[in-house]
Image 1: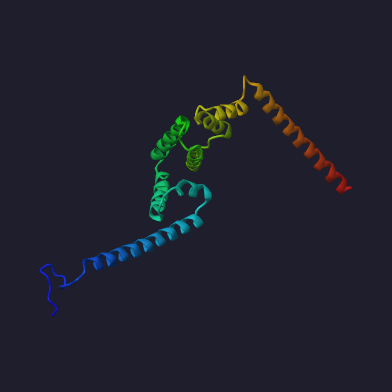
Image 2: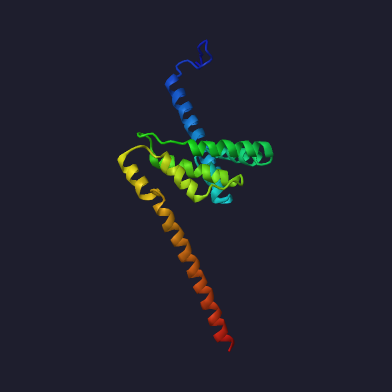
Length: 189
């Protein structure tokens, strides 16, 4: 009664059933794999500082995040690799240009990710340079040109304003120090 075909399957076996069972096993395996990957990602995300997390948060799986972290820390051990990486990343940051049809938010996020990565190598990009690189990288469209005009210094006119703000901050700090000295003298007497 239990006759079999030459292929090794029982006679009357519905191949369709085998496909359904196989698909179910595969989908359960994928779900288990995804669950483990999300757990790895969550564990990494809760144990590393936010600046490191920003460097690996774009990976799709926990295994990729872990490999990215290993690469980051291994690169920092070798001085030659560290210097060449700083040079490569800083050149990439300086030469970035967002095309007119690209996602500007993703472009800006990527630029800040590069800045953070450079900072993790000990190379700090100051805010003035970052602002200039960011504005220069935006597409040549009217809304971005208006933004550039509002933010970029025009013929040094903002330089005087910046110097004035620095001087005001210094005098305000001096006033605060004088006030603290007066208060401590009153309290002492």
